Amino acid sequence: MAVSVSYRTYLLEQMGQIRPVDSRRMFGGLCFFADGRAFALAADDTLYFKTDDTNRPDFEVAGMGPFMPFGDPARPMQYYELPVEVLEDPDQLAVWMAKAIAVAGRAKTKTRPRNKGM
Image 1 (cartoon, rainbow, N blue to C red):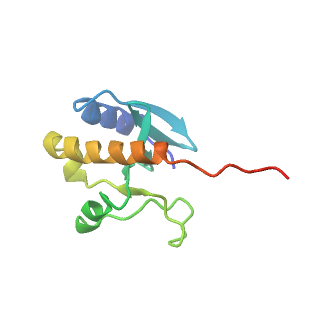
Image 2: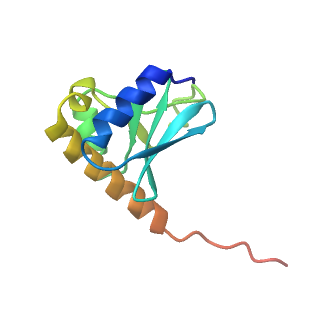
């Protein structure tokens, strides 16, 4: 799941034109953050954006599939591959990034049930 230095630099340049973005190495790949929200990841020099029911259709219409680090189609992650043409078009990239960041914001605010000890 490695990401080359040149690809990381390219991604930061492209997305950095839109808004400030940070990256961190995670699990052999990279995770990208905007406003403290993890909205994208890169693995094997491929970029994926966070999805939910609001933006997943955009990816599906473009023929893009989910990130499946375990190779099991029954266990995809909620990140879909970003079309290359979107990454190369700042206007489109701004729209797709905004949607992914919004998804990450909603996911971050979801409450999780607490374990109650016995």
